[in-house]
Length: 109
Length: 117
Image 1 (cartoon, each protein chain N blue to C red):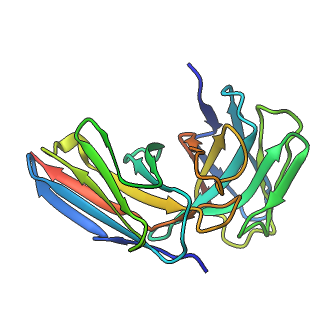
Image 2: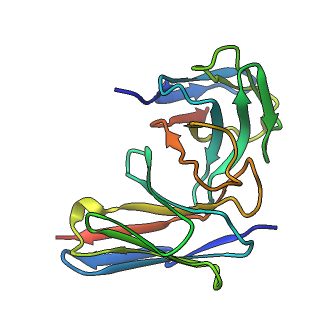
Image 3: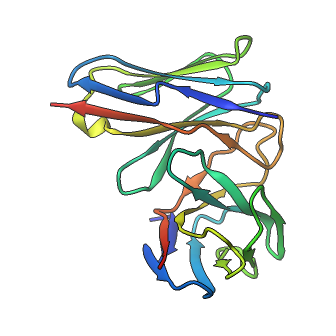
């Protein structure tokens, strides 16, 4: 059974701090997804990666396939980054993604 | 602008009533999905559809029904058989079915919050 674990569950930071959110999974994957859910509930895809590193603005996602681990980093965090960050992978299933429970990030000014 | 429209955003239902949540996409995506989100849990798959006139049960399909008569539409009916329907429901789509090859990103709607009174 594919399991996806995120840490920490909750994270509070001061504006400008460097943020790291971790994601571990139990079943080998073809790609891992990072998603962002804002307080209103809508979800947007941030990254999909199967190896190495991807960068978009202040967000960086890395993945280590051998260790079954991915991290999402936010540089120079800002209050508008406050959201729930979710990782997900297919875990070998062709039709289904398994989602982590999410990390609630709060960035204070 | 292309995207997914879910309606209504908020819905209240009395016990014993069926309700239908709408999901429409103008992205020309083949695959569509319905997820349920509960506090403290990851998203769980209710139903998915890989192509028009075809759909498959996900992990928690009991008490729900769907149809896919048009490519752009994938409505979800929450029936009275669903014992605990209060939740946040998210519709999503992807350009093609399947995540096994990896290169397939989900686009989500804004969600519908259902409360049973």
